[in-house]
Length: 394
Ligand code: SDX
Figure 1 (cartoon, rainbow, N blue to C red):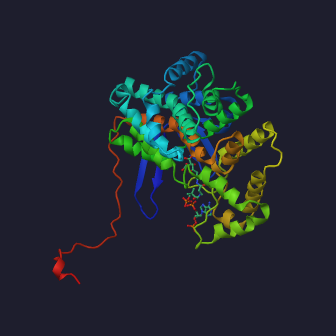
Figure 2: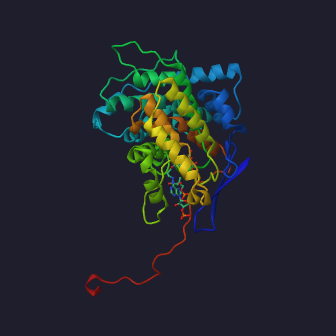
Figure 3: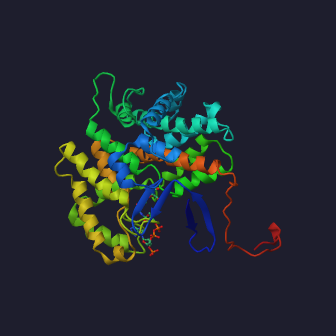
C-alpha cells in the first residue's frame, strides 16, 4: 500500500493513513489510480469504469462492467419527495448550497443503507451515491434556471444521461453531442480521486465517527466548496474574466506576488504538485477540443489563460515557489463553453469526486484497525489562571 502522510505546517506531528487507491508523486507530476496512470485512464477509459476501478481495485471485465452499470442505473432516480425540497430554496441559491443540503438529506430516505457495519449496506450506499449525484446535480441546475426537472434516461451512458438531464427541455428533441459527452466524461475521470485532499480528509474524519455515508459525502461537498479547493474552478474563471485582456495580465501577476495583497492566481499552485499537475495538461487539451467542436475560434478567456500561464511559468516568483497550473485552471473555460454557468463548476467537481470520497470512506470503514480521527493541537493560549469576579475586573 502507499503510505500517505500529511504534515501540519509548524507541527512535527503527522496525521498518516494508508491507502491503496491513489498515488501522487508531486515532484514528478505523477498520478496513479490503483496503479494505472491518469493519462491512460483518461485516454482509453470511461468514468464509470474508473468508478469500478476505484471501488473494487482493478479494471472490470466486460461482464463485471455490465453488472456494475446495471446496478448503478437501478438507482439513478431520487425519491419523488426530494423534488419538494427544492421549493424551499430561493431560485438564486448557489447550487453547491443545494447539494450540501440534499445529499445530506438522502439519509432521511434510504434507511436500508445507513448501517455502516453491514457490507451489503455499505456497497448499496456507495452505488446509490454514484447513481444519484448526477440526478441531484442536474435538479439543482434546473431549479436555479426555472426549468422543469428531467428524469434520468437509463438507455444513455452515464455522462450523456447527465447532459440530457441538464440541457434537455420537454418541448424539444434533445440529442447529446457525443464529442462533448466524451470530453465531460474525461473531465469526470480527471476529478474522480486525488489521495488525501482536504475534502477527502473531511469525509474520512466524518466517517471515522461512524456517521452514515450520506452525511460524510455532504461534509465533503461542503469542504470542496471553498475557493482554495474545489471552488477554485469557479474562482479561476472569474479571475480570467476580471483580467479580461492579455495586456492586463502583468498587473495581476504583480498582485499575486505581493505578500500584502490577498490576491492569488486561482487555478495555480498546489500543496503536493511541485511540477505540472498531470490533470491540467489533459484539461488544457480537452479545452481546445471542446472549443474546436463548438466552433469557438477566438475565446478571449482562453487567450488570457494561455498567456497568463506562459508569463507565470517564466517568472522567477512562480519558478522559485514551484507554482504550476492545476486542474482548475482550464476546467472553467471548458465547462462554460459547454453551457454550464460558473455556479455549476464546483457541483461538477463534486459529482465526479463522489466516487473518490466513497471509495476512500469504504477503505477506511473496512480497515479493522480504524479508530475515530482525533487531530491534536499545539496549545499557544493563556497559562492556567484563577477566576476573577465581575466587580474585580478592570
Ligand atoms: C484543488 O489537495 C488536492 O489534491 C486538491 C485538488 C484535488 O484534486 O482534490 O488537487 C484540487 O484544490 C487544486 C487547488 C485549487 N486551488 C487553487 O487553485 C487556489 C489558488 N491556489 C492557492 O490558493 C494555493 O496554491 C493552494 C491553496 C492550492 C496551495 O496553497 P499552499 O499549500 O500554501 O501552497 P504552497 O505551500 O505550495 O505555497 C508556496 C508559496 C506560498 O508563499 P510563501 O508562504 O512561501 O511566501 O506559494 C504561494 C504561497 O502563498 N502561492 C501562491 C499561489 N499558490 C501558492 N502565490 C500566488 N498565487 C498562487 N496561486
